[in-house]
Amino acid sequence: MEEFSVLLVDDEEDFLRTIIKRLAKRGLKAQGASRGEQALAMLAEEPRDVVVLDVKMPGMDGLEVLKRIKTNWPSTEVIMLTGHASIDAAMEGMNCGAFDYLMKPADLEDLLYKLEDAYRKKCVTKSRQTPSPMNGEPA
Image (cartoon, rainbow, N blue to C red; front, side, top):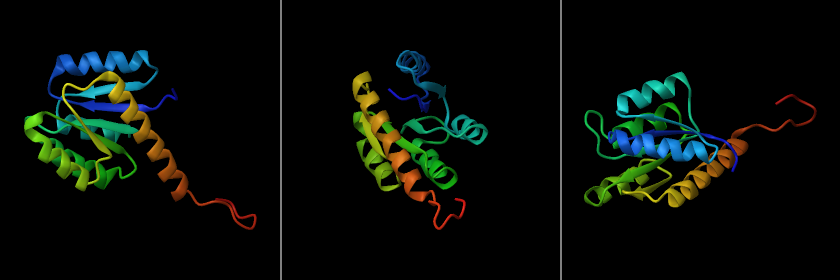
């Protein structure tokens, strides 16, 4: 698996620690934030390739964080993480630019699959936006 950076945002700290460790064992550069405001501050310091974002959190909820991510870091792909009660919020997230969503508790293999897909989409989108040199002109 190609190494890329992932930011997990979830107020359940045990879940966060466990997933970060498991992603790191798979060669991913994974970090965590327990609140939306913290995630945005971390992204401002160092943008990430993919964000896994819980829908329901205290303070700023996942939809608000998603909107700010897409405004400030539009090439960052976001996977929404939701419980059964907030499936409508996850669907709203898709309408606001989220790449996909996963139901909690997320299976690690499903999460890895979606992370890889999101990263591939980011790479394809970025390559389409990068101007190619024409007529000997530098890009």
